[in-house]
Amino acid sequence: MNNAAETKPSSMQALWFLAVGASAALVHFLVLVSIVNFTTITPAWANVGAFLIAFVVSFFGHFYLTFKPSHTSNNSSYNSSTFKNNSIKNKSKYLSALIKWFSSSAAGFIANQSLFVLGLRWFGEQYYMLIWLLITGVITVMTFALGKFWAFKP
Image: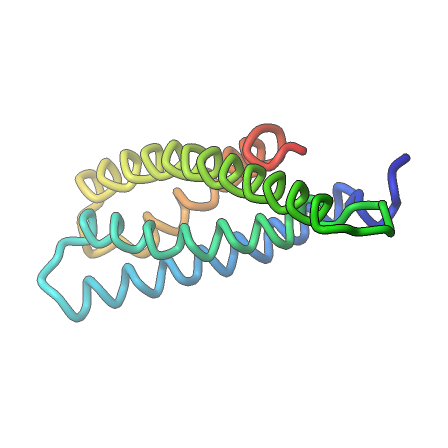
């Protein structure tokens, strides 16, 4: 039996995805700009570091908000055995989601980075912010589908 509180409507899930994704994108963008402005690292390499930092924001936000798994059991009577079994199941779900989301994010990043480098070559590094924003918008749709239907699928 599904509890209505456990199942998020698609519109609410999409809003959480956008909020978490926007937060991760903001972190990514701010780290990218900071690295470019305060170091001698090129935008293409700075984007790699920024992605890794933003991934942490993205994973925890999507795991606990957007695609929140059921962390509690419907069974109201707990004993140490039940708690241990639930803990093992949650760790397994967590690790599985982490690996799948990293794979999804890495695929999105590879597409993002490829298009980013291509855009830098075509239009010049002076437009790196605009290029990054446009490409990130397009890749967002792909990562939502991968998250919803694969990485965080219950």
